[in-house]
Every structure is written in structure tokens, then in C-alpha cells.
Length: 113
Length: 115
Image 1 (cartoon, one colour):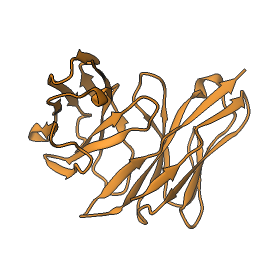
Image 2 (tube, chains in turn blue, brown; image 1 turned 60 degrees about the vertical axis):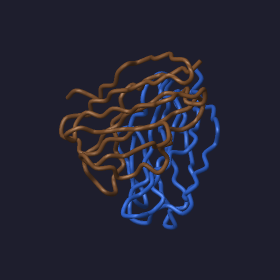
Image 3 (cartoon, chains in turn red, orange; image 1 turned 180 degrees about the vertical axis):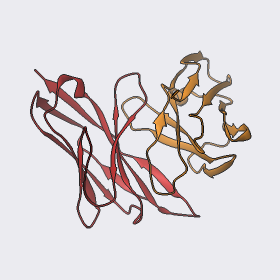
């Protein structure tokens, strides 16, 4: 079974770049690594996903090394509204024809003025 | 585009009682997920449907939890009888059919308190 590890918490200041890394072993070799953001009393919200190397969208970048044993979510120039919990989501490989979905335990990011 | 709808938003029951949660996914989304999120933890997948069929229910406590997805649209999750450790937020999510993409859309969740 795949196992994920994320830092429990991180602190940053407005305008800084924040990098959150998720370590994941035994993940599926042929599908995406996905990151979500969650605010209190809300469901998680999709941020970005990638398969390998680097992916960038309007809110974040995702870096995935060739061995896919980790991924790093990069948030450029964070603001107070980026204070949330961030989760990585991976599949642990096909078993009986499907990937078992595994969420990380989450990283609580606090952005300070 | 309407999001994933869930009801009720909050529920308080006593242990050994039964409870049911309802989810209406985004129109056209073939895949539906139910997650359990205990306070301070990441969501744990309970069951995944692809249209009417179950893809993964390996983490569903089948002695007390059941779920169905009628006609490949709405879904209900039931707990009978509830235990104290079932206190959690139950999240429903949906996605387009894709074997490798995990872009899911989540509802607001149902917060269950078992006393």
C-alpha cells in the first residue's frame, strides 16, 4: 500500500514563495499526482496535478522528480487567503483493476502579515 | 455549473442509531466518491462508484456502512448502527471518468456527531 508523508505545518509571510513536499512510495506508475487545498468547514478544492517533471497553472506549480517518489507544490507570492490545509493525493497502483486513492495527512499552512 | 450537493450539513445522533447522507454529483460526472474525514486527518476513501458499479469499497466498514448509487446519479451513504468513532465529516466528490486523473469536485460535507 502506498504511504504518503507531508510536513504537519508550515509558516510563511505574505509575498513569499512556499514549497510543500509530499513523499510517496509505491504509487501507481501511470497516473497523476494531485494536490488539494482545504479551508475550514469546506470540502477540498483541486489545485493542480501532474505526471512528471513540472506543471504550472495560474495558482501553483508542481515539481515531480523522475523517480516520482515525491512531489513539491509551489505557491508563488502567498497571501493571507492561502492559509489552509494542503493535501497530496496519489494512487497506490492497480489492484484488481483500479487505483486505491490515498490522501496525505495534510500540511497546515499559516500565512502571516 | 452547479457543484456537488450534500445533505444534511450537520447531524447529531446517539450511538447505535442509524443515519443516512445524500449526495447529488455534478451533472455528467460518472465517478462518485464518499470520504470520511476525521478531525485533523486527511480524507479517507470509503467507496468509489463508476456509474452504477462499485470500483473500490475496500475501506468501507461493511458491517455497519452501506452505500448505493441509483441510476448512476445520486448516492446515499448509510451507517447502521453508529459508533462514537464514526464522528467525522463525510465528504462526497465527483469527477469525470478518467482512469488516471484525480481532479475531483467536493461537496461541503456532512458533519456527523455521535454521542
